[in-house]
Image (cartoon, rainbow, N blue to C red):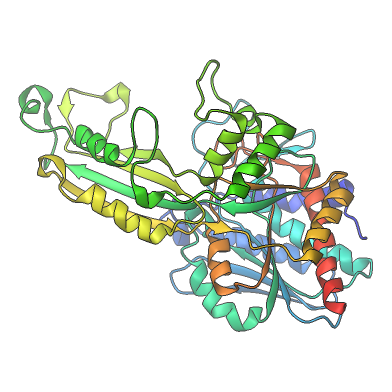
Length: 467
């Protein structure tokens, strides 16, 4: 089997990946003026130009642009065998914002390498994916290993919930053709010692909710006791959904039945790795964690509904806070829902709960966005064998299988379109990778190993179609 070395990756990928890291190509949800700023286009062109420099027998590179939507980069690599069908390799190039001040010596847009780790926003989530996908297939051709037609699809709205992707999937459906294997390179890893394969992803419901009580702010000495606090009303609305004492979600429509195999798998992972979830999170000393055990915490992160308040507005910084009863409070609520829950239907129930019969008849405006969860289909025997070989060859250990607490709307959308396709969701987002947080980091040897695993899987697909 072909192999990609750390030296190969450092020579062929790292210079351009490092340049990509300097581009503040924020996802549209975080940069409403992304078109005018041009950062997403700059990142797209950078990656496209890098791909053009690679060596393939047959490759077509296109940047698709639909009016008002982020671009999609598509590299189509012709088959080197007679096997039918298409392998799609997916990643994204848009980024989350810096999210605060990074640690001393680190900067979201000034990449820093420390040993085998590269620090910058977007390098692990998900800038590396283009390089891993392309270098994997290029190495196969260099070493004469056959593969089916491969389409590397890199979108630019994933961090916003992939609102633009569905339109491009409609556009590209004839081009994608008979999709037989889907490899998503945007998922996580519990450890860096093996290939981790994602078995499920939670769905997501984001709500931007504003509670208004005044046309403009008033002196708290004059208004308090008469005008209800917008913050208090917001608290009351949230407590309709979440038990503030336990963090449990109260709305039935946000819950799903947890399969028995999930419980059994979580117990197995906990037995081998210990309290891996607790160990990877930078909690403060003495914090009492949710969940009764290590296995319970794995299940809670992957199959429980949860609420996180991820943003607020209308509240002054403490340094300038005056004695004013504020006219409104805005919060961004991020709900994670179990993989088997219909996020769109759950959002309708949530909207009713948050916007009807509002305390004190305050004015409420709520805007919803959703992304569906995903449960991996059963593995074909050839793919099960390929994953075992891929992990053992690339990492020296058997693969691991676990659910992820995050969301990749792409997989849910593709599963609906291609119900019989074999899926592999994997990635480099392991401990301390800090996706979406400060100090995001790419473990470079893991990126190399994942690339090598991709080669094994794509080669196995071709072999399976020859038999």
